[in-house]
Length: 185
Image (cartoon, rainbow, N blue to C red):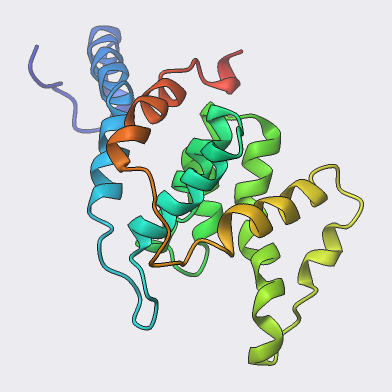
């Protein structure tokens, strides 16, 4: 069977769905490669920044790696702004969605909320509330998210910083995305 026969899902047979399930599992297994390929093309940036989005991601991940963070956090740092390209108005949620099946609740929360927490550094210059993150005060990952922004995100726009290469992070990305999804545990 190369293709299913149905044109409406309600008419699919068990054999057709078993066939599609096999193909989907193969496709899911290639997720890390697609992500690495996507990251490698993030070589342009919004006007005004000194570095590309790829370099920002590499700097963030390199800082986490050099600070002996877990491999999961290093990969999360690498991917934290992957949503900038396709979902610039909710990039944090986009990145968190990509990571969610493969990372802990804590890492997911940090990435999902980092955009709001990052506003601390600039919102007041634009007439917005720099303390928007305060609504999360008391949350168990509040300080972890502040630390993420301070140590790995806001400081990673330096054209002089010596980052590790995407190729050096590739094995880590592949290991994280080879994990059994948390939802299946």
